Image (tube, rainbow, N blue to C red; front, top):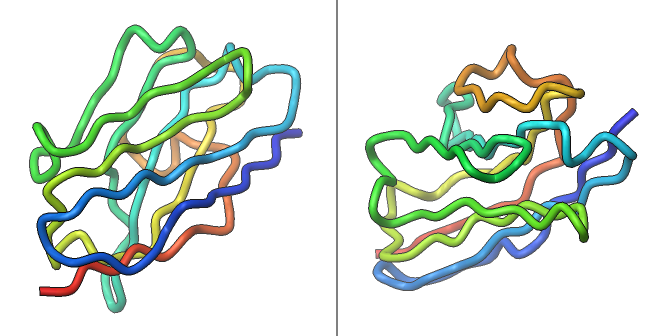
Length: 125
């Protein structure tokens, strides 16, 4: 069983930076790929970024490439999403997700077994 708790969301102006974090419980963290997804009001949940269990491999959706960076610390069981040059379109609830015992990163929601409760990120224009 894995429990995920996100933190670090908030309200910022366009162009600002924000870092959201996810703390994971469970012994299999280092062998589990992690992902960040987001869901805006009235829209489906969408992939943002993912990272392999080792942290070597990462993937991003096109709209955040060059602006967002995903990273993980397996010693602390945490995964972070550094978001720079934020835009109003980045406004959403951001969710952390884990693939139980699978190191390969993935981009589809149904590839992930565990989800956090989400943290709100609001970017004003």
